[in-house]
Image: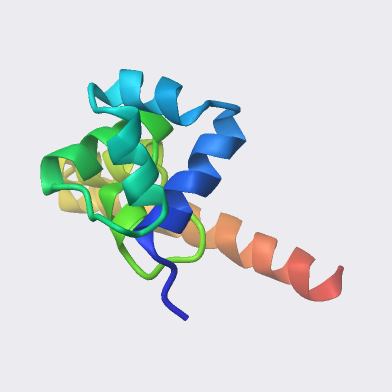
Length: 112
C-alpha cells in the first residue's frame, strides 16, 4: 500500500505538535499550501519536499517513497555516505563489527 506524501506530512507535523501554520513558517510556505499537500490536492515541488524532509529530519526518500517508516534517518544516511571515506581494510573491519551487532540483535528478537 502506497502512503501518500500528504499523509506523511500530516503524520510528521502532528508528531512535532505543530500547526499547519507553524510548518509553513518553518519551510517558508503558506498555510494554504500545507493544507493542500496534506489533503493530497497538490504535490510539493522537489525543493519544497526537501525542505519538509529537512525540518522533520527524515530523508527525502522516506517522505516521497513507499516506505512505511523512516528506517534511514538523516544521521544514518550521513554515516553511510561517510563510509566512502574509509579504505577497504577499515570498511571490512566495520562491516564485521556491524554484522556481529546485527546478528546479536536478530537473535535477541527471535528469542524474545
